[in-house]
Length: 307
Image (cartoon, rainbow, N blue to C red; front, side):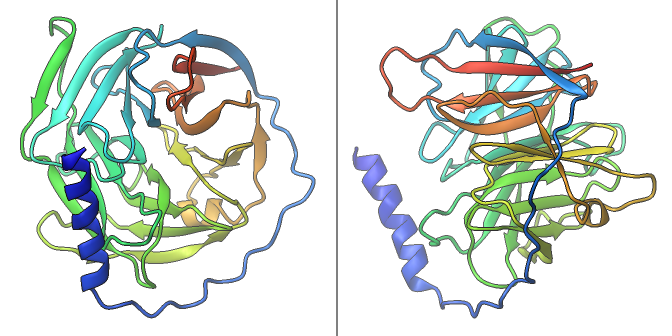
């Protein structure tokens, strides 16, 4: 409890000691109506996770180096760990990010990075419900090869890159982190009445804070997570009730793809479903829900396969 009070005090101090930024009005967004349902995916499996200590899962991503693993994490003030599950929902261990706090980890992505032949894990410490933080943080580290590791895995990640980003128009709360595998650009999508999109172009600076680029807004209320397929051709963003889907055409940027009207993907309503992610071969996508402290509930993994 004392540790939690210290953390809250530190966040409050950060918020009160900084100058209030001037905000600019985002570009007006066009509302959608009568969105078409995409029938190329279908609900396939509901899988109980065998670790009910994971009550606050807010992000999920499929491994690239470790293709059989799913990476998940919890959100604010939970341990500074990325947890490992297999596709059967079996707990495999954790990666602890040494020297990094979990102020409010909200989303995760896996893909390319500084070295061409390697895969990286990106953890978005981007939640800010009370608009107190001076920067959005993304932790980046090389995806370790865990093929021969003994279970349960208890691995430590030393000195992950700390990517610090400033919004151009004040502080924001966000729960969606997207990584474009074609350009290695990062996108942060805010959570509010609409979803405002900001880009951090590759290569991202791991030494000093950089300003995000405003891209535009979408009429999505309370965006909670998202993912881009490993081939870069499909984009999904979810709220608590729907998953929105965009097909990216040849030669299109993410910005251009998101100007199209999305379709709706199949989605089984969850207790507090926040996380969504394509699997590594793009044959489907996963969702997983927070369960908080509700008695009798266990974390549950949902998989939707491509027909």
